[in-house]
Amino acid sequence: MSASIGPQAPIPDLRAGAGAAQGGRHGACWAIGTHGTRQQIPVVKRKHGKVKSHPNGSRRSKGRTKMSVVSSTFGGVQLSADDAKKFNDQVTYGRPKPAAVASFARGRPLAKQYARKGYAIVKPRP
Amino acid sequence: MAAPDAFAIRAIRADDALNKLSLGKPEFAPLKTFLRNRALKFEAGLLARTYVLVASEDAERGGRVWGYVTLVACEVQTTSQNCPEDETGWPTDLAMPAIKLARLAVHKELQGKDLGTQLVGWAMALIIEHVACRVGCRLLVTDAKRGSVGFYEKLGFTMLDTEDNKRRDAPVMFVPLRKLKPAS
Image (cartoon, each protein chain N blue to C red):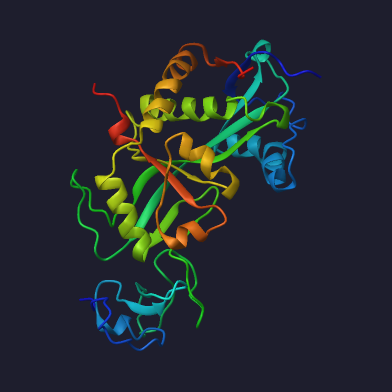
């Protein structure tokens, strides 16, 4: 169960874990986003009802707004809240950009050459 | 030493000269440090694969490195409560397998000469034609430095279009690979 997000929605209890008590697999809590919107942020509930961490592995600190994008150079990408929804929409319904098609087309002969010889030859633009 | 006329893209070797790469800006220092100190270790540990640009005559022997790209397997994990299954039936609250373009660098004298473009194009084709056809892999992802966002957009990367992402020092950009794959 999750509460609706809308202009009429009351601002719920912001204490850590208060949202988790409202139910759901991961539960949910509320925060005021950095751009002034209310965001629903899932939290993990411990056995004793205390918030341990966000499912993306980051520690939540009291009173600090959390980014909903977490990505490290050699790690995965974790998205929550609006970013997750937007990402899923973009991946599901979006089409590849013509520039991506062109990049792929440019790279195909190089990949073929690499597979055959173990290297691919490229030249810089003069 | 003048830059060569032609380059080879190949896997990094232990006898490559890794310490002559100059990128021109202090903010690129981590890219040099990675190449010098970590790339071979990560390679040996199967943690990341690095492919280097060397003079074409060094294609089959150690040589000076003029640029490189590093690729690593990763996943995109979404934790939204309102994500339906996508059109392939993949529940979108599961992680999506992806490849991350973790590092990309080209020597300062060669920047703006399409070598970065060719490295990314080669990587994209390699992933689609040689990785995604054998191992599930839905996306090519990168954390683009702010100054490089335009470069990646020209190559067809899409910016994750949210305020949080746009505010990051290195916003997440991606290319969905499935619809790029030619019909087999």
